[in-house]
Length: 196
Length: 259
Image (tube, rainbow over all chains, first blue to last red; front, top):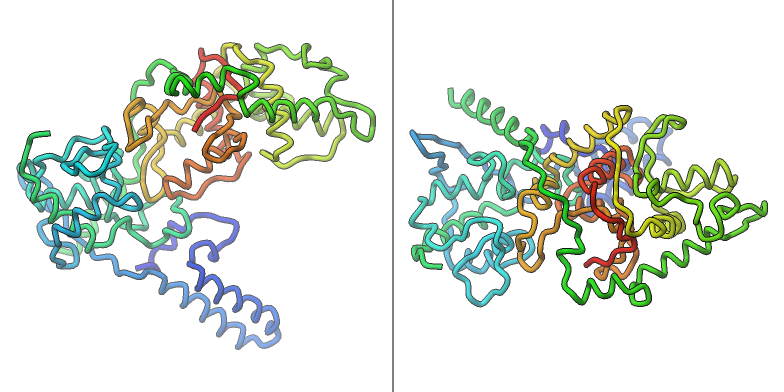
């Protein structure tokens, strides 16, 4: 997947070194040093170049699962679970509180009384399981921009290549893994009580 | 057939993700000061409590510094900078016909520093330059910002506007999402402000430092998980220009106190 995505590399001073993690960066750095020493031996030089490049293409720790957007008269939906994974509602409830990647509470009010300072940017999620089916919620979590092009909500499982000027250490990664998206969906469907 | 469908969906997807946002109506300018608590306002208003005044004092030292060739800013602009017109200082950034580019206040100071005083050049946003900027901008404290939307600087204005409305990074948000559409609401514990630049360079409690506008841009970009532009780059200056036009009518507050 990463091999096809050269078009959207951020233009940076450091060239390819900026798009790799620490280990790969170190490997390519060592390769660079050896390359300078072995400039005389062209075949060795080419071999090391090949090694450095091929090691960079194995960065992505998870394969991005393709999904298919479907549409009927009124609704957009993704009916198949991402990567065919089954979600667990309990794990989803823990994830929703997390501040690092998920951070749902930054914008939405949710029926989670033990956390303070719920955000007031998005709509409250009380009773969201009544309003939408799981398949409809999946579109909104994968990328809300498909439903509302002007939204502030990040695409939690959008194609990583489509980000503009992505910061190096997030290269090739989605905000959430497919498992996490399914966990959160499983939790959201259980929210049936409309009262705030 | 299936592949064709996937391809067309991808195209649609790319179009959606690349498109700029609509122009939302820009509300009346409101300084970050009005979003602060009373305690914070008191700290900013009192020159003896305001930690940003340290940078002003440091800037005054650079201003009065005579250097190797026994010349200094005070030769032309007066001992306390009284010959610098505050109304003119509040009109930066502006387009300069001589240099044929947009000049921020830092650019202007640096141009004087190297061309007139013949001193050693500084990096953009270097500590010394930010302190000088704080001192000089402080002279215009209380002055109404009036940045002219110059015809010669149309290119800069358009660039700044497009950057302000562009989605960046993994979060895929624009500046105007937080600072125009949802301003005044709470994002978790933080109240979103309009992100006005009238207090810059500001003292920030978070880092305990006086922070220039371009450094603040960097922080915003990293928060969006996007690659920042370089400090003093064309893009940042254009953004600074556009934001200065948005803040027209506010009072200069340098050095402001913010979180």
